[in-house]
Length: 153
Image (tube, rainbow, N blue to C red):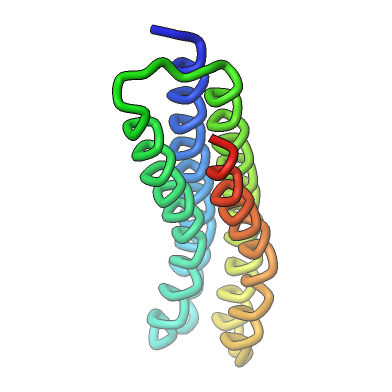
């Protein structure tokens, strides 16, 4: 197997693995807060569940990137990838993976605080949704950058 293919496969592996790990951690942070909230305000489960699920989207961005780049690698059709091409895929994988990992964890923290406030009787669902969009924006930017990097292959 050539170095370009090894780099590319490493890139798409990091893309899906890091983004999925971030989503798992972020949703666990939010979900833990929902469990605590249920002790005080069980009728708010729906709002808590929505907020706890928000960090799952970063894993989806990693999966979208994985599909795009996996298809692109397959489109080469048996040709060896150059080290440059493999490096592009690796860079895209790191961009999406790291941005999604960190933003999902931080988004989970924002959501957990909102869930806790809802459990204390505060009406902050909408405000929490807005604030939770801020860390997610950077995962979206990383996905857009990775999409633009496809033109370099």
